Length: 180
Image 1 (cartoon, rainbow, N blue to C red):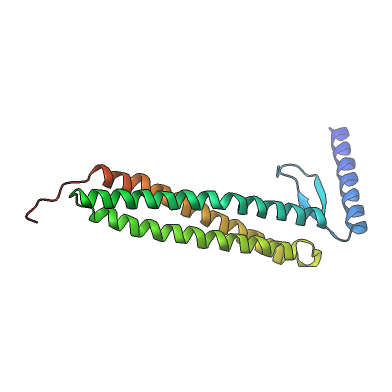
Image 2 (cartoon, one colour; image 1 turned 90 degrees about the vertical axis):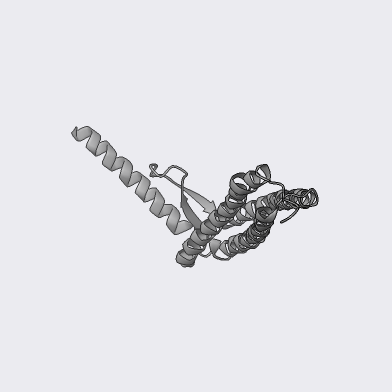
């Protein structure tokens, strides 16, 4: 038991002394914990690597965003066309028209939220290399994560609106009587 405790203490001292040594020699790096929180080891990442990773993520999101926007716009156009065709055929489309207004609002919210997310991601780069400003880096990182969550929630709201309301309203279309 004493041997295990001694070995653990020695290992801890070695790791902590290496950590202190690296912290003193590298002045433009940020120390980021590894992916698994249960690990005690840390990975030293240079400022250039951090900004490159942020730039690549921003590029990835900007590349993926048009596909989502196009999908949502195509959904709007298809539902709009279906609504107009059903109105011409004499169906009551009042619920679908309300759904179209709500869908249009959600699509514009998605675009606005996505732009806000990218703007917040760009702010992270400003604080990424400033070791003295870790607090602002952490705050902007958390803000960016929240903004991404908002984007995902808005996309899910669009999906949910289509699945729960628009589809049901299309399937439940009823003919309008001629006298009314």
